[in-house]
Figure (cartoon, rainbow, N blue to C red):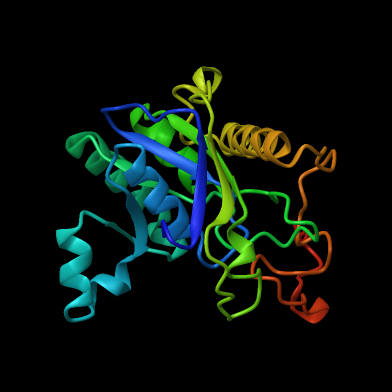
Length: 234
C-alpha cells in the first residue's frame, strides 16, 4: 500500500476504547486503503463480515483469529446481530470499520449516498462513538465499478478523520425507527462534509437515493412489477 499510495493524513483516531469508524465507499480497494490507514494511525483494523464467511475452511479461521466480527445478513437476525456485535466491541475495546452505505456509492460523481442503519444501531445499543472518515484517490488505482487494477505508484490519497459524531439526542432510542433514520442521515452528512473538504467542492444538497433513481441498493434496475401497490418503494 505504501508503494501504491502516498497517504496524506489529517486528524487522529481515539487511541483506545471501542470505536465505530464510518468511511465513504467509492472503490473496491477501499477496505484495504482504510485498513492500512487505520494501522498507520495506531489502531488494529476490524471489519464486519458476513457470518457465512466464517464457515469457510481456513478463511473462517483467519477471520476469527484476526478479530473480525461475524454478522447475519437476514432481516430477522439483523437486530440481534447488531446487539451481539456491539457487546463484542465493548468487551474487546475494538475499532471496527463499517461502511454505512453498505456498497459502492451510486452517486454519479462519487459523493456519499443514503446510508444503511447498521452502524447507528450498533452505536446506540452500547453508546459506542462513531467517527466519520473520508478518503479520496483510491479509484485512480481501482476505478469504481471496474474490476481492474491500474498500476500507478505513489498515487496521492487523502485520508481525513473527523471528530466523533454527537448522537446524544438519540440516546436510549436504539429501537426507534425514526431516531435510527435521523441518526444515520447525520452520520452520512458528516462524512460528506469531510469529503467536501478534501475535494474542495460542494456536494449535492440531498443525499443520493438509488431507489428514487430506479435502482436497488446494489445498482440494479428496479422491476416495477415487483413493487407492491400498497408499499412505497422507499
